Image 1 (cartoon, rainbow, N blue to C red):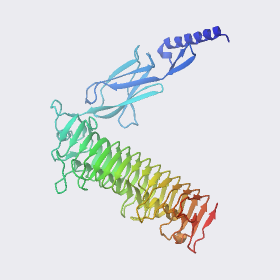
Image 2 (image 1 turned 60 degrees about the vertical axis):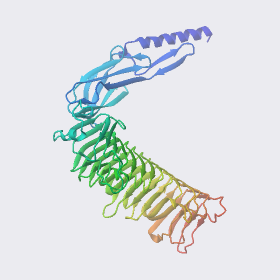
Image 3 (image 1 turned 180 degrees about the horizontal axis):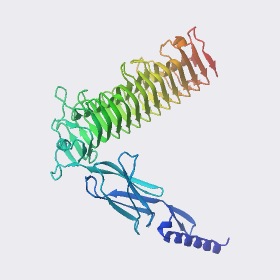
Image 4 (image 1 turned 45 degrees about the vertical axis):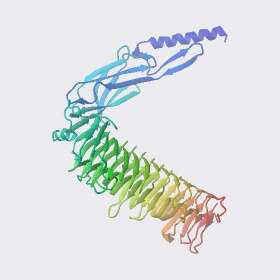
Length: 532
């Protein structure tokens, strides 16, 4: 093709796209293209859609202007159908309007929401979906005295028995030592973290001083939302009254999110006595005794929270629970246990998932629990401890975790049953003086599987049994593990009877001068099967 032909072809392509761009918007695709004639390069502009409201929050029975724009690069589109809907639960959607944008791509409609609440509003055009949160309030609290109340408690108390939404505008709200008392069917919503600040005491309270809960309840609570503010108790961590403590007894359909809770004597958030259908997400909890506690219930999602500098536990399902998911949380400097899935009998934990959490300076513990998955967590200066201290843990799966530990073990099974450790990376660092260190302790009754783990730099053993005598009660497979730079033995029976152990395809090496045998079984009763 000649240069003249190339130029002519480029001009034709450019003219075709010019016609497409100037065509009626109803015929336009969700995305558009522009050709640069000098190079023949095609640049794609992705369609964008925006939507929002003129007033947020708004009061009940006030018409709300919902507006937005649809664009594609520098181009806007008219006559493209826009569907606007709302939902209170994120599952069931109701129509607001179907409209089309004007010649510059803007659209708008007015709507009166049926009742107060926190709504999701979404606009849809083709494959574009965007949403925002619309708050319709019954009471608005403002320190300037120009709205419904200057007192949060007075606003809550003034709601009808059916409840409602209390919106608290920016400002510092001092409770002067009087706990804020919640009730059912209430949404307490602030203007944002560090914008709306609720403080129990104006000065720090220490040991020996009387301390109350900052926010609490006196009866059963259902259908509660608490979000978007900072809470300061101003108390030294003493394992006493806490931040948000629901004490009523039967707490159902509870959402707490986007909160910052600091300087707390007891727990940052504690849902006590009984819980069902709980969400605690995206909260920041600092300088407290315990971060988040749920007691004796089922169905809880604890996700995306940050917990730092807790004297006790980070996240603790207490008494017993069923169906708790703890995921994507960040925990740092936890004095006792970062995530504690344990409880004393007769209670027991069931069906718990602990995954994708990041922990610095704190362990995960599982005890007296059944059907627990601990997966894909990152732990630095901590361990995963599965022990029978409060009751035998059964069917515990420890999968895909990355552990850096100076402790006695990276993963420890101490009297678990039918449990496994698979695809974990364990990097051991120098332990304290007189601490015997092992990558994985494999004291598992019944069927145990230690498969495809990487264990590095353990001061003493790669895998051992920590003095447990399992005998004929166990059938353990140790397969395809990589054990490097162990201090004494790669795999060791502790001179106790582990009758049925199958070792297959493990790679065991060490450059340490103290290293002796890759595999050592000393008990005469043992009948280990060892294959390359």
